Image (tube, rainbow, N blue to C red; front, top):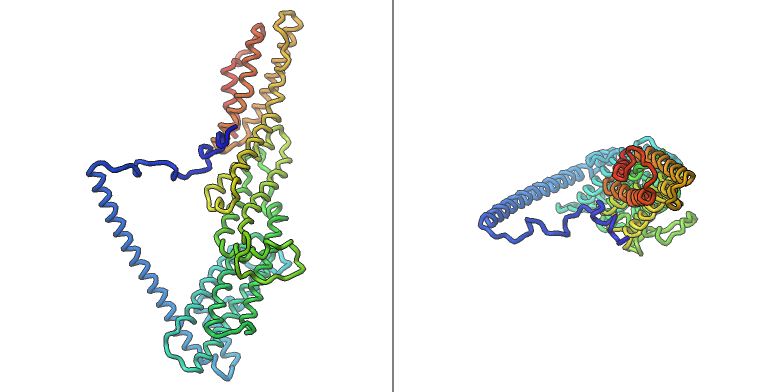
Length: 482
């Protein structure tokens, strides 16, 4: 079969309209078209102007917020002046963090269940919400420390350095808590959400306050980044070895339709790419890793190799392998092939209609097209070859009684096998109309001509009512209705 003949863009997994021309792209020829174009351009200019005003207003709000945080900071600096007063500092730090909506970082022990825990006191959704709030707070905090235009006394500068160090240490506890969460798919997403804010904000703070590599905050930030990289490496290993296999309920659909896990995992893989920069850096250390946990690795400072983005194709392959393995539970002839065909098509369509396609190797779609062709052939061999074989060996056109009885018995056996197969496969589900049409057409092309030829070769055989060639073809068009 020619490439794309069945599973190309016409097969239903490319909804892009960029390849052809449209009426809007054709040359304009009349004055009304030109007038419409002028009106459209004016509207676009007006919208652009309104957007610029909105952006300016938004920027002004951000600057107002930063200014407000700086004013709060000036009011809290006396608590961080020498001599140190621990209780006053603790209260001031709590108020400072609360002003960013991040006061809860002082009690992040409730975030999760530890390295060996299967879960935590907070739900996955709540952990994600807190990580996003934390990243926003850290960014605002960094800007508040960075935008210090007012003249400060030397003692105030020192006190602000103390406040920054205390704030940074408190915010780093969230990174440690995420790294210590029980291994799960959502943990990897949280790690990716945390990694870039830490790697970007803390070097800025170190430059602002002249913290050297040996400063406690710098050391703690390096340790946090290394812990996040290690946690990501462990999650990557678990994704490949256990999560895809067991994290989602594997109750097999008895109609051969797309398993719900396909939507879950393909959506998850897209979430990984939500933080593709983090994925690039965090998993770069794992690209050359043999999954040994005996040695801690430093966080990467520059991209290396594929930078972990090859993980997308790798995880999709893991999902496909598990689907193949689980399909063995479907014992009815041909149902296993229909199941993997449905699921492979669903995976390809979700990949090429999303940004996942940008991270798949050349030829990835072609390989799966050929695989789907193989599934269809396997389905025909398992389901319909035994049915058609009932008509093999029809013999010569002799009119002896024994020969007629043999041919009648053979036709009766064909009808029985046909009806049994059709009865079962009417209940099978092929949700995509393109795939459903391909399967029906393939069945008809392999069954109807054989039946027609048999009847033409044996006109002496009486055809039962409702068993004409046209009626048989109609019968086959009812397959896979679910």
